[in-house]
Length: 433
Ligand code: LLP
Image 1 (cartoon, rainbow, N blue to C red):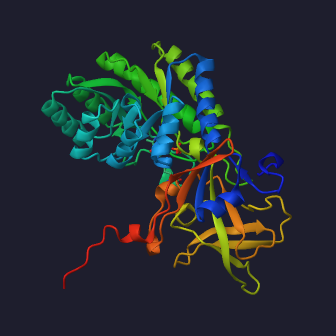
Image 2: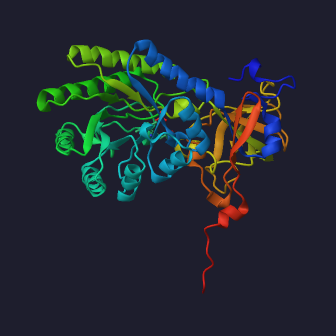
Image 3: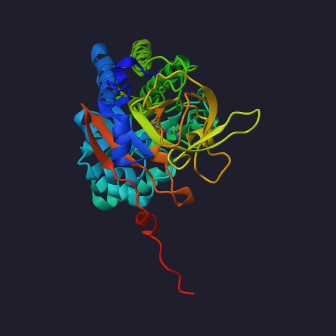
């Protein structure tokens, strides 16, 4: 997966024009590095598809994939919208001076305080998920004499072929209004009856790391059908159809997804076709990609430490990070490719189990990783770690979370500092016993 143009004269892996070995020396490991131009390129690729199809759109970066002030800055500069799912993500976007009218607020149990914060900061769109939220939001808007754009999240009843923990669109899902039982219609009537809620359209998200086009085409069609039903039944015409995110990316050789923008092209065409068939006017199309924007742009750098040989089995080669900085292998059996940063194309010598340093047998970053000969002190680069790696990091075993560096055009900048040991006890208070 590493090509010759990613190597410098020394043969080292380059990230954003920076030598990965030098980055590891300067900032320490474990280290998360983003190639910022790759992030920009992906957002631009999405935008180009919409421009080419002449449709009104928003590329709304699902910031749960990686949220940091620096990331919201890049998204803002590239003309993206963002979706946030908590006060914490919203706060980070505010601190990045992200334009609030381009923020959508998601979540299946937004608290009153979160809704208040969203309204006080003039968040662009509230993605309403459930009846409780309609009431909470109505109360907050009344109290503040405010109004806000809203969209209704529906459960499209489409099962995407992916890990069941990251499926979200099936009928039995905790997210959104059910269609069959009339919940979505009831929600629409409630929202239309409230002049403080400006109904903009409808939303669905079928899951994450999806490779099949059929699920996306299915959700696109379903949303237009619902829009047509709402027009016929209630005289309401949706201005926006938001199909969510979920475009799968390649992690290992066995993965063969379409390019993320090819998924989007098919979605646009499906919506156009169905809109014509239903004689609706063409809505704006919003997408919410997370993984496809930041996943391939991210690298985790680790330093090799101990080794254990087990007779007849693959050896354990242990690095200085693990499930605390990337829980995806342990949680989802997610697979990644890892290379020796000083010589990514070196011939492989052995297949190892790449182990983390956490006190848990399940802390294995890769069950079968081909590597050249490695020594303690060697730097390994795990590829495509940019989505849901740092954002799901923890302090398990009281390990500090890694630093994050943005690299672009040969320059590196620290954008999240490495946690210190003092940070780990920062919130602790002594117990008076
Ligand atoms: N929109 C909504 C409403 C979502 O819930 C999500 C992801 C996205 C967009 C972005 O999906 P993406 O384009 O990133 O696939 N922690 C899991 C992934 C959870 C995804 C949750 N929702 C993982 O590491 O695979």
